[in-house]
Image (cartoon, rainbow, N blue to C red):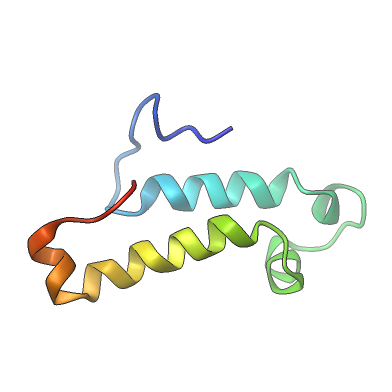
Length: 74
């Protein structure tokens, strides 16, 4: 369950998405059962939707048009 509705964490524009991605990876079966690192699980395709959301959030920080119009989502 995403936590971005309850309280937004401090520390940047994409901190909420980053926190959700980290929690998803740490709770995945890849890390818990197989004992792999979260980085390896991310490369294998776990938590793909949150990874894409984090990428889009970071990209929107560089996009000039979205800087004027505001970020979408988080």
